[in-house]
Image (cartoon, rainbow, N blue to C red; front, side):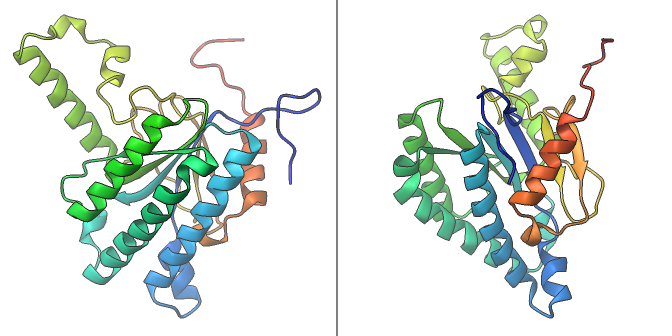
Length: 245
């Protein structure tokens, strides 16, 4: 594995990495397994990659777990994904403080089952007690980038209607404060496994200046070495942010 850190001769990883966890169903189909088996394997990969990110000094990891469009999938598949999420949240409640891992959700939680919403609120409360310097995992659940921007615009409009803000107050910084990611730096690196090369409605606002890395590796097969490759590719990019060096 690569070496990271702030010591002499070592390079720090990106502060914020975002990943579209894609390819679970195809991974299962290739093995003659039900798609639900792919999601179970993908959940274990998330756990492994989150731990590795924390160990190498990444401060934020944001993952695309369930999009606003994923409700179109079969009831069996959706139920399996939600059951895996419940299992993860129950474990997180028990281990977040011990492992110093903050957990935050992006997305419209309204359609999510009340039991899961209650667990998400519990993890939010634990997160508030942890240091801002601790590693943070952001899970995008019932999330879509366009939906997030619409919800932010509605909240700003409501504040204007209530006399708390004026339309002229709105700039990029102010608008960012209405997004699900308020207070979190934008990702420097967005990774999409599985061979697809599109954002699929993921972090549309936040990814404006992110570097993108695509790989044919399916998400359940994505490991620490694959993440090292992505970070190495990121380091080779010339990040000018619209300017000239």
